[in-house]
Amino acid sequence: MLPIAVAAVILYFMFYNVLYKKAKSSAAMTDAKAVNIAGSLRMLTQRCMKCHLMVGANLNPDTAMSQLEAAIKLFDKRLELLKKYAPSEEIKYLTKRVEQEWTAHRVRLLGTPDKRKAVSLLRENNDLLEMCDDLVNGIAHASHKKLTSLVNVAGRQRMLSQRIAKNCVAIHWGLGSDDVHQEFRLAIKMFDESMDSLMSSRFNSPRVALALEQASNRWKSYRPQCNAACSGSCIPQNVYQITDAVLEKMDNITGMYEEIADN
Image (cartoon, rainbow, N blue to C red; front, side):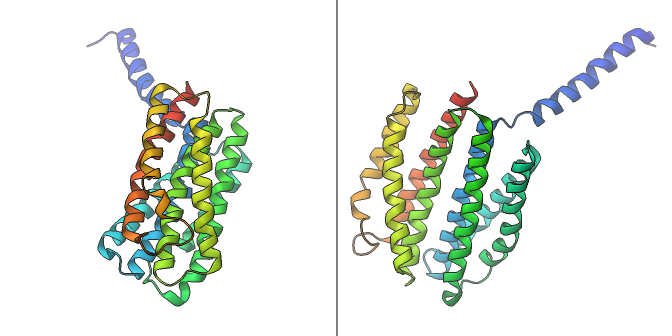
């Protein structure tokens, strides 16, 4: 039988490891990571809407439905992480507002696409996007760290890639109102301007600079075909393929900026 003192030491270290791991897990959400995760919600709103429209427009509907379900699950998971993270009453309020809007919106996204109801769903989707954007900006502002702004801008590029594709699919499905065309053009313009801003940042490491150059070149190889409208050579399948490739690259870059901000 172990002496009481030895047993006490063993129990101490056992519980210390459990508590330490638990504390480490709860503290793992840094402000930069929170900006990254909240920023991904912006992207997921647009990706979900894009996939819903693709099902309606009969553009690879089976794949689109699978992507929609995966995006909804990821949104749910990341929203839960942000609810646990919320460090202030303001962030709790902004997170709760997103959750309330999302709860109703996700039901409609999973419903059978209806062209007559798509216009109102697009407006609802943009309302949710604005709420997610308010959440990201609220976290970034509260962090008082300059480098979280780079995480924010890089993360916004992910959203813009899906916003471009979403509007292209909407135009293809016959939902090309003036607002949709304008949103499409503005998303491309903002993506270009934000990419230039990121590439000129003095905080870029050689690794980040190279990744940005690769993402920019990938985008520029297709960008000239997506101008005033999504028609002719601007085929929806090509648009969402290239924007998904850019999304993947910008997601990696956002993670790199998160590491820089934390270090």
